[in-house]
Amino acid sequence: MFEVLHRYRILLSCGFILFISLLLATVNARFPYRMDPVGVLFLEVMQPLQGGLTALTQGSVQIWDQYRDLLSVHQTNEVLRTRLAALERMHEQLIELELDNQRLELLLGLGAQAPGSPIAARVIGRNPGVWTHSAVLDKGERHGIRKGMAVLSPAGVVGQVVSAGPHAAHILFISAPNSGIDALVQRSRVPGIVSGTLAGHCHLKYVQRGSDVQVGDVVIASGLDGIFPKGQQIGRVIRIATRDDGMFQDIEVRLSAELAKIEEVLVVAPAVVRAGAAQLGGG
Amino acid sequence: MPQRSSEQEPRNSEVGRLRTFGLIGGCGAVAILLQTSVLPALPFAPDLLLIVCVYLGIYHRSVGGAAWAFFLGYALDSCSGLPVGAHTLAMSLVFSAAALMSQSLWMNNPVSVCGLIAMAVLLKMVTFLFLHGVEWASVLFLPLVARYVLWDVLFSILLTPLIFALLAMGERAPSRA
Image (cartoon, rainbow over the protein chains, first blue to last red):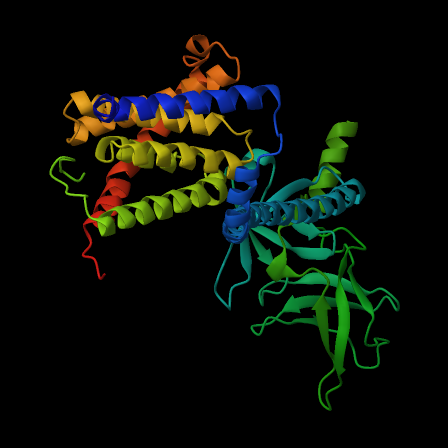
């Protein structure tokens, strides 16, 4: 008997534990979570270790989650930085467009006031030389621009067209030494000629000593030269020097138009041309 | 994978038996602790105790081995919060299958052990489904369940050499007694 038991001990022990397990499973399936003293004993032994290890695991998982969150925050930060840079660029473009818009509106207002059919043009090139004061416009003869036309900006007189090609034109600023505009002091109507200097300043020349000119007086185009519309602002008197000798005063004028920064201009036909055109139109 | 024969291992001495007793108990306790505390935090939790039971089935085909498989399953049931019986039956079945197979088949090679581990995972899954009154044959081939079982098999097979090597090293370590 014992020999048989010993011979089949594996089989018998397997059968026994399977039977007991099945019995346990069946009983517990019918009465789940009944009192189990052996299980309680196991749990009492394991509970402190389980508690410690679970806390350690949860701590590690939490640290890992925080690390992942941190990585995610870093990535989000990068994305937001890129987006912010794009938005900043867009904002700058919008500001630029707004400024363009404002300038063009002013130009449009000037165009409505200017006689004849003024031609709006953009400055597309400047002469980098110190002694020459000229620029290139993006419109030429094809657009109606001719040599001798007045160039204006909303701020004031800019210069004159000195040559015109089919699609571009050269202008000479009034700050050039070889330019000259017949002008008036707006307040006292004292006449003179505004002309540039090599240093880039403008002077109101040929004003007799004793004439009523003060610092801050506005200087406007007289219209007598037949090129610049009468009343167009040229600049303001900033300095008056009376020399001991000579007939005239030395009057320095600051131009109203910032020639170095000008971007859009209005080209206006000379008064004689306008008059001719008006006669042709009338006839 | 440790290559050895259960017949070649002399385990007659009391010291050897005590050491094996302590080793299996210690490994089982560690496995239960890891399985109930650490591994649930991972996406796939391999059953370490199942690997220990397969080891017992191959290398400790005895009444003691069967008792260990039963008690380890029981302890896992108690510590995992399940009603007692599911893991007990599963581990008993795994031990029985491993013991009976290794009694009649040559199981001391890595391929056979891997096959046995895969079979043990499936056996455990079927036992659970059976105990929950689910028609296991239909559920086992659902994509989600099949994927879970496949991952479980894969992780268990990957961990088997490590656990077998640790247990074998523990049993072979020179005694100080």
